[in-house]
Length: 305
Image (cartoon, rainbow, N blue to C red; front, side, top):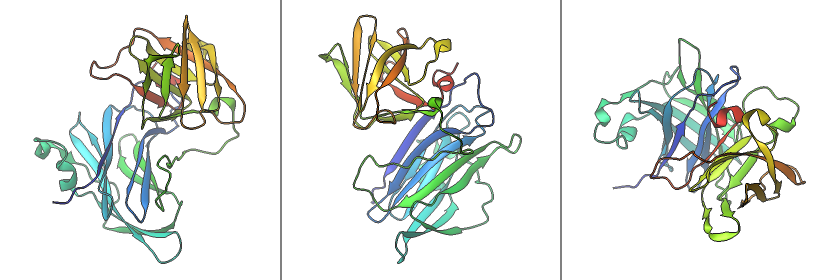
């Protein structure tokens, strides 16, 4: 029996106030592939409202056919597409062949009641679709359309040679280009390590975690949840409590000093920056989880206000 790689991403889309109704919202991203190529996707909800509930998704397979799928446990439905990638003789050129998602591939991971789940058809699928692209070209692919509202779930995909850098990832932004503003600056935490009051016993290291957004948040047992941003947001209770320097940041809350080290530069630019912090001391995650890390495109979205 062959072993197929299954990559899952779980997403909770919370309610939030002050939404930009015309903007899209990133749901998830991931990759799959093998020795000859790497396939990347970034998934968006367009527009961001009305909001969705909890969803999950990912890929099954790597070499040969990749099954890209999403599931809605509440509605007990799943959808997506199959893609096969052929490396062409021309340099950095690939042929992509799209087909309807093979339902059997997904039902194998849905559990004992898989037969009760319903597969939703992808829009405008009239048979195989073949596209030839250069490495780095980006294609948009509709996964699902709400005919009543016009809202869509869209994958933006690309293909490239496998990277020797395990942290290399594809990031895509939708919308119309505009001049850069201070509020557009984002924080990125890659495999972060956190310590409290420089005490080795009161710290956490989270390999594999990668969060990126205008606001990032994390939970520490006994401390609560913290939200971090580069710009002032007094309307939500953020206070200037620390600074970001390269791949490190530090801040103080009460008598406690928190230090965080990332494996990459945390903020854009070549200068140190002020850090604004909001602490929720009474917030607790599910009892089975020891730490939670998250991010959002805006501060409004981070806590679902």
